[in-house]
Image 1 (tube, rainbow, N blue to C red):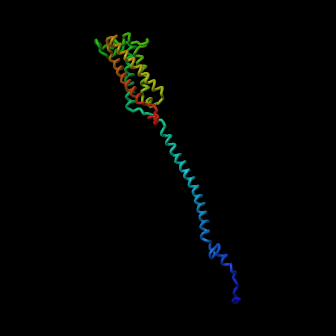
Image 2 (image 1 turned 90 degrees about the vertical axis):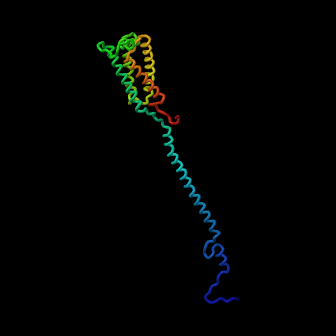
Length: 232
């Protein structure tokens, strides 16, 4: 029999094995903790991935929100501005035509007013203004010219040129077409029916022709109209 020293106690024979089975010296086994830590890291990565996707979606929505107004502004219609020289030129010509028309109207109704015009075989203002062709539809041509240029003095003013109301634009075009046709008839009447030319009437004819060219040019250029950039 084995003898024990006094003061010592016997240790169970299987104590060491049971302690070393799960731990070594009171520490967890490396192989057991590796699996557990790997699972925790996977769960943390999954949790971190979800906010990241949400942030990405939020960033994409914010980016779309910023670009949407830009796209809407890009297709907004724009106004074709009328150049200042065009506005003032057409208005000045209209006022000049209005002034001559007023003078011819006064001379037509006031016999004491004589037109400052030479009287020759070719140039004779009195012969033209007192001829039957000085009336159209029972109305004096001078009065028709006065009404015509009174309208143009308003329609061709710089303030009206800045308007984009379509009826004004079409009224301007229609009046100029009717005016140039009437001028051609008056020139024909002077040359082939009356046999004389009125210098004051000719000045109105020249102004009307110049305005006709300018107004047609402005119409073709789209002055005072709205344009769609997507169709430009």
